[in-house]
Image 1 (tube, rainbow, N blue to C red):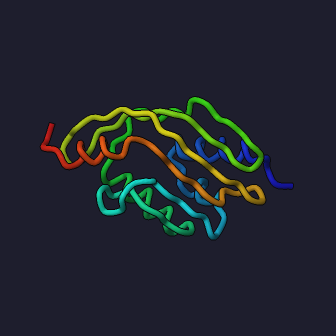
Image 2: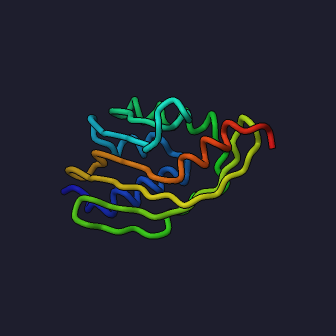
Length: 136
């Protein structure tokens, strides 16, 4: 019997929190749609990726550009197979040492006990501006 959608998403965050990307990938459908809303090319993690291999590309880019010091999913809202999560992050950009802290929103869609899609929203303009800035 598949897990309920809220538990699936909570398990994804737990896996990310312990740095267990293989466990996170195991929670995805083979055709997962993974998107950081923002203009592709303006920041290494922005854009749409498909399938677990695309998600690996996302996490590779994330590790190359960000040193995350705080990542907190604060409120989870379930509406059937759609889970919306409000949270916050604090990080340092590796290319220039700039520090950022901002709120985010994640939207997951779960199908048959696995994540079928993920979309992340935040102030992408602020991130691009910091990324393009000189060293802190």
